[in-house]
Image 1 (spheres, helix red, strand yellow):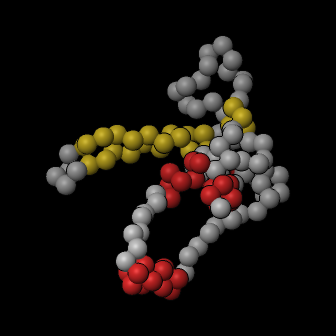
Image 2: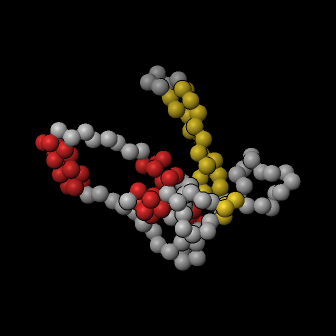
Image 3: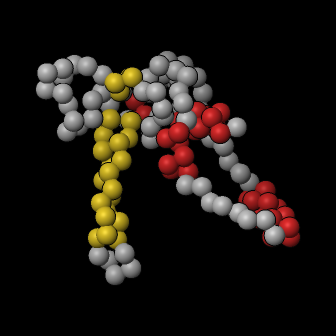
Length: 121
């Protein structure tokens, strides 16, 4: 599979650029079901469940922490064998035809949500 860079500028309240962010993303739209992955998994919480959870926590005065889901997917270990091309701008001039074997999930993979969920549970 191919990869691409997603670039984003973070700005402060006045609109001044504070920092530039770059994220390497797998082109998961090229994956073929039953060939590259078995099934799509998307854990979703119902609004009522979230409200009940927050009401219970507020009643018992528990601390609630937030988790950044975008970066959480990077910690899931893959069970399948996934190869990606060399990232644009970081190609090895001597070995241009070599690919990378992924050990951890990257953004854009259909396996990323399930890999994270199985790692965290």
